[in-house]
Length: 212
Image (cartoon, rainbow, N blue to C red; front, side):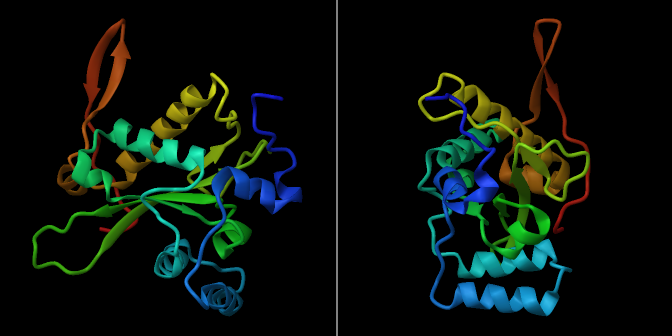
């Protein structure tokens, strides 16, 4: 058996993608609601709005994905960001297969972080998310934040390095999307970079967020 998960046949059968990423589990009535929302929005599917709908109707355990790749990727992203146990629980995984995000934005799964409120009196929940497209196609342009081309099988010696590499990509995008204030609230550690055999810390720069 090949050590590389065969991505070439994924578009021919969603069940293969489902084995890799998991299929969404929904509260009653939500598949129909998402279909209706897509019809109303046409081809102008807004990722922020659609993620709010998916978040509301999702019945899967976003903190404990059922498939090995998703579970390990979430763990590695938390490690890459240096999150403590409390902040770890704020990192969520969503498979978005068969949703409008998949059909119109090529987004197969999403990792999001729920931002801690500035104080205990703030009731509004705030999320920042990173989207990913799993494909073998060589693209010069894509709508998702990250394109994942290779995922080794869980028993391959290449599995852990590949997941760690993908996790670093996610961590880098999160550091760009999060504001400095959000980074501080989450307790995200500066990125480490090797320079001539030594480790130096890379401070995140101030950047815009999907939600401020």
